[in-house]
Image 1 (cartoon, rainbow, N blue to C red):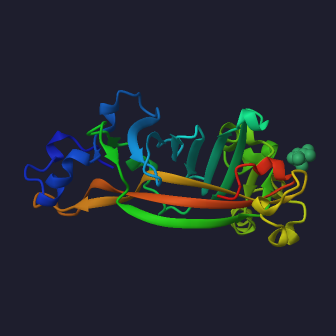
Image 2: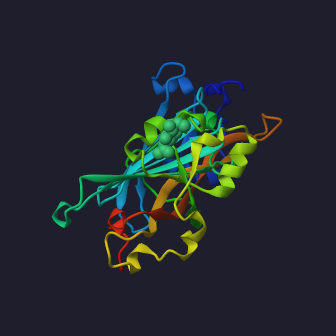
Image 3: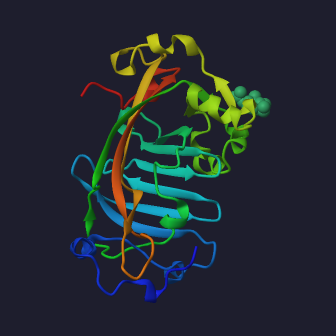
Amino acid sequence: MPAPGRRDVPTKLPAQLLLLLPLLLLLGSPRCVGAGVGAPAELRVRVRLPDGQVTKESLQADSDADSISLELRKPDGTLVSFTADFKKDVKIFRALILGELEKGQSQFQALCFVTRLHHNEIIPSEAMAKLRQKNPRAVRQAEEMRGLEQLHMDIAVNFSQGGLLSPHLHNVCAEAADAIYTRQEDVRFWLEQGVDSSVFEALPKASEQMELPRCRLVGDRGKSCTCRYGLSLAWYPCMLKYCHSRERPTPYKCGIRSCQKNYNFDFYVPQRQLCLWDEDP
Ligand SMILES: *[C@@H]1O[C@H](CO)[C@@H](O)[C@H](O)[C@H]1NC(C)=O
């Protein structure tokens, strides 16, 4: 891909684009970032969460590893991270949930959810690496709400074998070694791709999980139940925008479309006390 230089900026911007400009992240030259060749590029933005609160989000792209990672801290202190590994068709969600010490909870609990990455879910890492901050103070609100995805996580991932699924797993899920979950349908796909089956482990009572009660309905802290954890990717570049110019024969990349997406993960916990956040509202 030719590196876009200053000369490529059209002298007459389309009117629609001009209106957007204060908020726009332009696809600039990778050299402006100040990072060395191959070093991950980072973008820091302020974003509005679904509940209206504002938080900081960091997005990193590594075009050599062909991966993107996103991290944001929720107002309650939970650290949510998302990693897209395009090389392995894997996406990893991780939540570091702070315990409430007055409720006798340990300092934090880590969860990892691993599912198949489809390549149209987020822009390519190479494009992500070129995004530039135009207005760091702007609070970004996603242009498109992608709705809620409900995922039933019915398989466990063996942490020590996790590198066979994605090289990112060891770093991202280290704190969640005993709580890495995935789904049968994704496992089927990865096995077809040649991933070793030793990565995946059946969860106890896998077939009965659907009948296990939701943790919020279970009084006994020692009982197994189906836990739910919800998280939101508040703002991420989900599509490339293309512009037309008289000087160019074909449309060219000139910006991004941003999306927000919420996820609910349902997963087995052997004890109700591993799911203390799942309570009646
Ligand atoms: C994970 O895999 C390793 C190597 O196959 C095995 O020794 C270990 O027992 C597995 N861990 C669990 C929790 O099953």
